Amino acid sequence: MKRNFSCALLIAILFACVAQAQKIGEPAPDFQATDSNGQAHKLSEYRGKFVVLEWHNNGCPYTRKHYESGNMERLQKEWTARGVIWFTVISSAPGQQGYVTAQQENDYMKKMNAAPTAALLDPSGDVGKLYAAKTTPHMFVINTNGVLIYDGAIDSKATTDQADIATSTNYVSQALDEAMAGKPVSTPTSRPYGCSVKYAR
Image 1 (cartoon, rainbow, N blue to C red):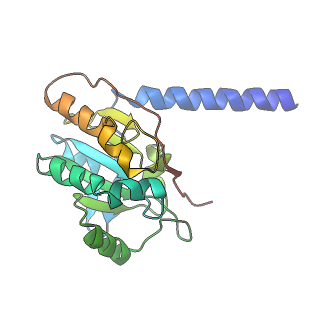
Image 2 (tube, rainbow, N blue to C red; image 1 turned 30 degrees about the vertical axis):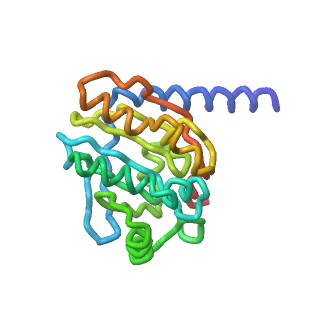
């Protein structure tokens, strides 16, 4: 009985991994979510633009690494200035680490000088589960045709040390640079690192 259960669990994990890998090169799942200013956003409305999805938890030390260093804000400003739509997505459930009200998120973004296109509030976890977002941060890049071209970590050094940012490969910028130049994305997937997304239990 235990062996059968273990085999079934292994098969389920393998299928989950294959399903995630197959998403690259396929249409990104459409969604609708409301931002911290009460505005609704639907992914399909942004066809023709590159879109970055950034899963966020302001209590996570891996997230703080990129915000307290100014790295995430720099990326947001750089890429939105180039026409990229950048959504910070918060899928923490009420009572879980990282959950914020709309006002709390607006206060946080002002304090950190953050500059995403919008911060999407996803306390139900619907958007997070649609993308199988696992960590904060977990990054996704969608091209102008609505196709997912990157799924994984923000960069190549899975630490909480801000000093590592300067010597790491930023996979998000790399994917955007290559795709905008008409080149294939050289690293379309990587293992996301950070705190687990705090979905409702």
